[in-house]
Length: 384
Image (cartoon, rainbow, N blue to C red):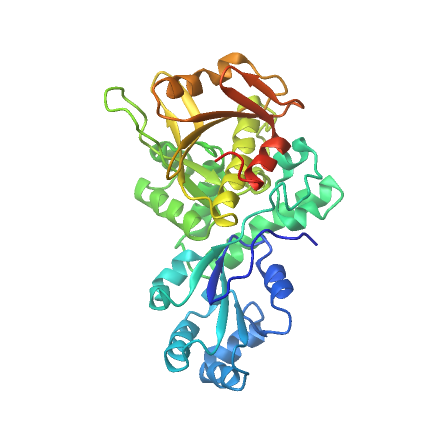
């Protein structure tokens, strides 16, 4: 079992994260002996759906200060009304830990009713620190960082798990929750969208290749973000005089998952594809810095029509950094040119490169780190 970086809040909270990131395992480890409602169990789900009053009655029997865990709260949103009522009637008497993998259903169910009473926390795939940096770089680029995948020793078992992950996602998250009207169309879209992982998204092209309407594709992307399977990376536009790309990029949350979604005929060993997968690992580390370590800021990418690009721009409260990611064992000086350009214009304060080599390098103002060293910098907040 991995020791996660997320710490237990002192008040009620929502725990959000894609399925398979270890929410249940974490909740059971940090809240042993708490009152636990598992809504993935059909008997529990049906029982509380038929009589939500029982939920309130069971909590009323608990001692003051008790923790109550509701796993996969989006499966039975009516319980949010009960929790809201309990918080009003018995302020600060009970603490609730509410896990979920569908932001859409929680929003629709009035999660804002608990605003101010329950804070948000996020659980991601494993970070380098959580794995104690005990991994092969090529391995996580190929199979990702879900806890269950890392616990498997054989590649064929990892492939089987990831294939099952996608099948379960389609059945349990999409079909059973009725998030889309046509599952076949969504499945085709998912396969095509995976080919645009880490790239500026061509919605019209995806619609054409998947055989669905453009507005439908835009709705499908909303489903992916709402179920936390992917996220948008917005474009950064610091200059008004130079035309810059303004369309966002889309990243699936884990490289192993996106490769399992992709058509089996795809060659994942091309430098471009491996680069996109490595970028998603770096993004995971940046998100961990934000969610686990409380580093303030937002991140973007920067690109011009001429092809000049920086993979990540972190805009903090007091400073900005640029990060260029290359899935190569040899770093070329030219890789850092876009970073130097932004630094010369005082748009960023520090420049970093991440690559699959073994040595820490410095090329003018650009510090270049092997992946594991970069992860250590993120975990210790040395980048900011």
